[in-house]
Length: 267
Image (tube, rainbow, N blue to C red; front, side, top):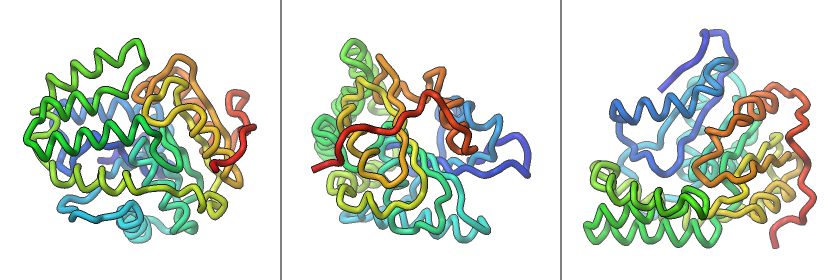
């Protein structure tokens, strides 16, 4: 999916999170995607690119990053800006480490060098429920870590209700992606990432947590960290500061809201 103000605008590649299923989005899905892209689409030529279909068990995040690297090399003459959300952020970080010449600037949205305990546990429950043919339970597990402690029950209930719709297609691809991210840990390779990085996240993220975001940013050679208060895993792109923070970083403008991390790297 491509959206933007004009053909000569600078491109930005957006890698989506786990909720997509390597299938053309429904009309409702398109509206949700376009809503999440609106903060960027007014200024950039936005390319929203999902993962390929037909993933085999044992696929790795490096394999998925290589798919994107091939697409960038074929469609663009030089490095591009990349924005990766959640699972898409894991792939984007791997892309920047494995294919540094293809990434100009990188934004990690609700993503880090590895999953936190909450995110890993909830994704494993999703995979187990799908394997057992229980889409309602899979949806509840998916929603359980998306909000804040106050709103997580609502996300869980919505996920349980929508599970059969969410997981109607691409279950095998989703399970393969979950397996890939379960094994993902780029902690030791963070110093290899040469692109400037912005880590933008919520302080109530149950999939990672603020300490993991801070440690990831601290382990990168050139990174800034923005943490939104009272914001969960799925609320970052809807925050009023998200568009200005991300576009300011991609355009190389100084931003008072982005600060260098002060915590030590991951151990």
